[in-house]
Length: 434
Image (tube, rainbow, N blue to C red):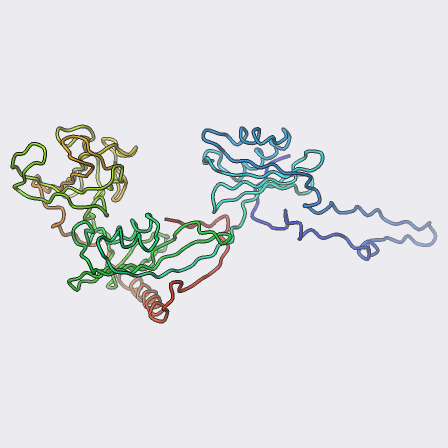
């Protein structure tokens, strides 16, 4: 039997959609031969029993580290012939190279150990079903019913942005993403003050009433004690690429982000005279030290090429990236490097290049971050860069319309949940979760 992957069709395997033929229907199918011949009735083949009636027992399993699907099916004691049908048909819809530990499956069998149905779930958004149809099996990628809640939260900074957002029980991913929106405008390591204010509007995705992840941050604002307010509105272009913009239509992203570790503690400033904490001598510190927990991810400040990766004196494990227009960035005291940050690699802005450590001459885990321009070191937090893009024309008009709609909704709602919608994710569609 050949494997066939088709679009989702609930009637293939939902028992309530399998109709039984009524006696009146059978009567309509009788064929009467003229009276010159004996009466004959065409044979009526009864329909197969509903799917649930065919199931005699079920097997369940989960992939372990290093498993193939076949190995997991064997461990779950799925009969040989059923295993063959499952592998053969799932391969038409599912890339077996992308199977991961904790993927789950269930296998329904009849009294003769024949496969009735198999479901395979690789994550909350990807579920596949193999079911028998006529004399063959068909594999389908299922529709996924989802619910999306739009949530609005606000608060005041007490000691740190991270601590204040954490008190709202927000995911670390959401906290990190909030800080990242303003990465080119604000340094939350040095520019946060008690009584600063913040607001965040974001999406929560639910499946079967369980939270499966966060969607886009639709709006973010940060009000500083000095009166400055920074806002970011989410917008997607026609190709589905999203970014945050100011209310004037300027993209918040620039050629460089201000800090490779958005949420950390500034433990040493840029200065021409600093007493070294280990050597005890006064000498320039032409960068900034950002204290963060061991293993904290470090992002590339901008697009560029790795020109050095290795151990370099007191900097310990270090990466140097060359950028356009005479800029270089330096990242020292790393605990380890990321796989994609090898010497000669092309790097994209915000790509993870390594992790905070304490290698070299260091009193604790932190990042020594430096920026040079045409051979001269600059204070990373004093540099100014132009926005990557500015909306104009029809794009600006459409942006203004969506921005006004969102702000009007926020102005008329005092609730945490400002909207709820339900939709069905189709196999040819995708969503990105934080």
